[in-house]
Image 1 (cartoon, helix red, strand yellow):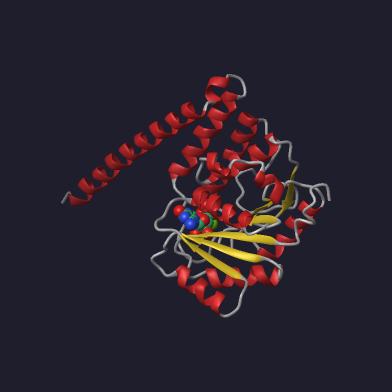
Image 2: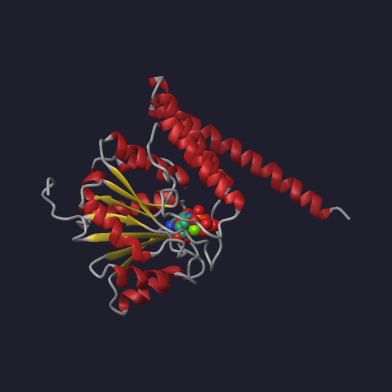
Length: 282
Ligand SMILES: Nc1nc2c(ncn2[C@@H]2O[C@H](COP(=O)(O)OP(=O)(O)OP(=O)(O)O)[C@@H](O)[C@H]2O)c(=O)[nH]1
Ligand SMILES: [Mg+2]
């Protein structure tokens, strides 16, 4: 091993962000540990009102290799992963796996992701869009957003990754240590694209492993149009920064994000007012 840390699969942490996943969490934790018995599962829960964190704590009390990090309020998927990775790295994780709690990703595929890291990849992505990958049951609209977003990210960033928005992946410890996690700012799909772009920019190899992505069966989606638009805005800024360095400045990107968040909140207010008015009409 060139890094002196031994194989990435030796001490993997599987980070699971959760918000209201009480119906799924026990099953996903058990399936992860069945697939990777030497893993530590780290659930990052944003004080889910449905008691997700309490279920995880009970599993821990029953002796399963699981920890729960409870954060005070819902703060987004990207920030949940940033906190989880920081904790896992501090605990000496050899690799960090990302997986959704809603069983859209099959935990049985984690060993393949870790194998790719053992083979020298810095990032292994469970991909829907390489030969053998599938996403049955995904609505046409969702598929269009996902495929379109990936094409846009590949075009703006020059990234040779078919499924850069995928949330099922594994990073080598060293790949994460090279990245200043505090400066990663995207939240949903944008977070996945930003992380892949950063790994690529540091010269890390990215490997895609075909997976079958299933639509969630239980619990509700936290997907929103804000997440999609934020990802497109950030890809545009990063793409522009490749040609005009001005757009790569942290303060410029921060200003653009602030402007976007304020405008989006304004639009949301107007939309909800219009809906309320419509509902009151006789
Ligand atoms: N800690 C934390 N977890 C979150 C937050 N938002 C989403 N999650 C979790 O992130 C994972 C992905 O969220 P989903 O709602 O499944 O999003 P998605 O997969 O894009 O959407 P669906 O296909 O509709 O399920 C799930 O495990 C969620 O519980 C958040 O703000 N904080
Ligand atoms: Mg999901």
